[in-house]
Image 1: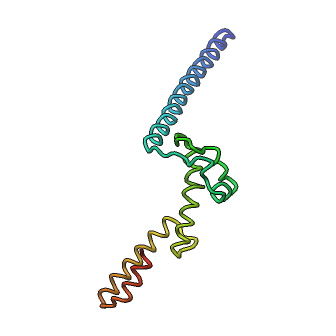
Image 2 (image 1 turned 120 degrees about the vertical axis):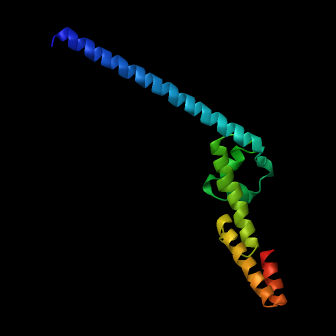
Image 3 (image 1 turned 30 degrees about the vertical axis):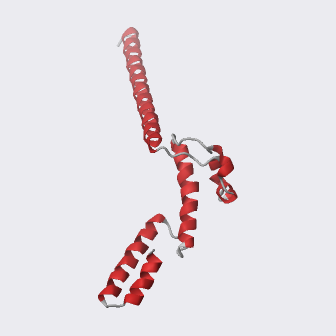
Length: 144
């Protein structure tokens, strides 16, 4: 094979690879933009606004190492993935933990409280079937 033919083949191959990489770059950029806009639209539609930093309790500001993000995003409308992560990990989690503890289920999570609620409902039904109204009332209090 002549040197000139080999040069043309390699240059053509390099050009094809460059065009493919450029097309891939445009496709990836398009998908990135779509994802960013989609997340922003969906979160904005929920109209979740962070509590203003000056209205946060000391516990909310200092609960865990990352909860300082609640101060950073204070008063802002939730529109990004990092904001949603902050809200879920530090605001909702703290309030869920406190609610579970005050209800007498320390350490419970949203998922485990669902199981607890189902179990208590079944126990209430069983107590009522046995005409144990006092037991059913006690269980209902615990469920409430």
